[in-house]
Length: 262
Ligand code: NAD
Ligand code: ZN
Image (cartoon, rainbow, N blue to C red):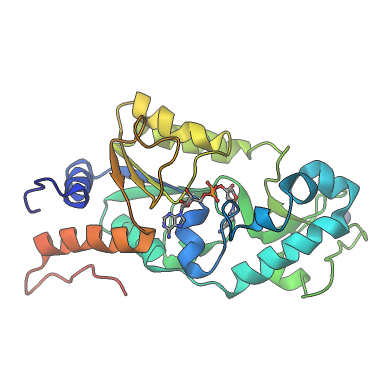
């Protein structure tokens, strides 16, 4: 690893290389470059769909067909998306023994598609549907067709197995995520505004347990300047590509493969 000097990317790469037990917490921002809009901001889903009308468990129980207007868009957008350089970069870091787990608030399955193996889906996944009446589960791709609301064998309207506002976090995901936060050496917080509770507590738990917090986000968040130790301002794919380059610069010899990603 080259001397870090005042380059924050080099400094972050040095920390990751030294500690070798990093965990990533990702949010909607990491998938923006895969064509999936985030929820907040002018281009976000909330500009089109009021979350109180479309993204609460109460709304789903009252009018599932209406909520499926938004869900249909989410399912189709996620279905066409493929992982970008940031997802692939995290998978490469896991393969190198630098990152040991990804806690994701995303429901798009792109970390697994990129090759990450330890993925904690904190808010569930769009890939599965569940019946809120008889609890039967189905794979979305086997049950959902564009333009139709998916039905259970019992005729109830199915819900994606994601955490809507008003639903608790699946307890196993919550337990494992908090344990990862308490025991990691570096927490990489990537593409999240850290406004959704309780996911937004994870960086604080990691920090209080002694981890360094490295934030990757082009914007300031509520974490920047207090919980964050190193803020890498830029898109997730560009910053991860540069972090990988730091590792490659160190390890690239005629006999060792480079970790560059496309
Ligand atoms: P958010 O929309 O609140 O914040 C997104 C953050 O990403 C912002 O801080 C923004 O500055 C940053 N960002 C934008 N482009 C980026 C880029 N190229 N690289 C790095 N950062 C970038 O998202 P959130 O904090 O994840 O909270 C929204 C909730 O909605 C979460 O629960 C999430 O699961 C869900 N959601 C998921 C998806 C998905 O699965 N892809 C998409 C939208 C929303
Ligand atoms: Zn059913």
